[in-house]
View 1 (cartoon, rainbow, N blue to C red):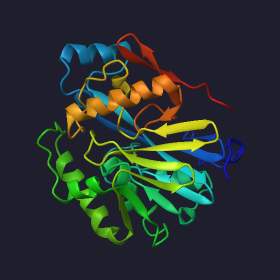
View 2: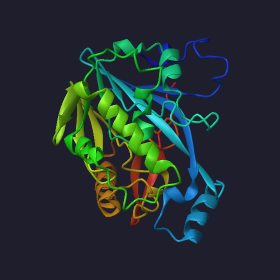
View 3: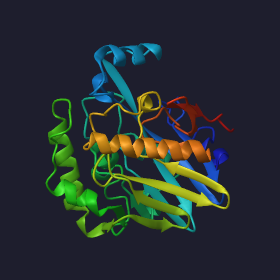
Length: 306
């Protein structure tokens, strides 16, 4: 099993890796490792397509962020429970080679953490957007995973990407083609390994993937439970701006109104239980809790535990 000590061995990172890129924690008897796949620079308008430009500009300015580009963090999770090693999402891979120091660092960082892709017993895909599946198409993982490793995703997600509808999205240029291509290739190349589920599926002891819909028709979260401890991986149910403005539509929300309903329900639930969460696009390591702040929410990052 990995631990904080194991994953922070002196000399275990490559010389160009001088930033934290993995963070270990335990949920009862379940080991969890959050790994940064890098960042994904996108137009800042992708954060909130229904926001007034002045409101989005003010939100960015409050955080001392540039008004034109927002660097989306890309977080992947590895879970070990009951003798199974579960990779939750697979990062961007090499789908955007023209973005220097962007995403696609998962394979290198798995190696740095001492995780052999061949040891992965299960893959969970929260949804089929390129920044969550591209790693399965890149040399770092492709061909190194077990040839029969099961890949779990919601049946509704597989059905949607057979003929995707982007009519309610506001994608940047190139994005529709990239999304369609990456999802289609994953479906084709891993078809025999896909294990669709309807509502939820227990992948390993205490590791349950649950379909929420909203962001995509089959978008799912992963709930971890062991003893009295809990943790939820929210995937793309929440983005950094959604604690202050849960009503803002993300450009990648395929059903924006449903995405808002799902988001608010999950944030209310997590605020009530105070259980920690991890999300794909919150600042690494994205481990924190939700508090209620009037009519909206407040993000409370955990203190790093060394």
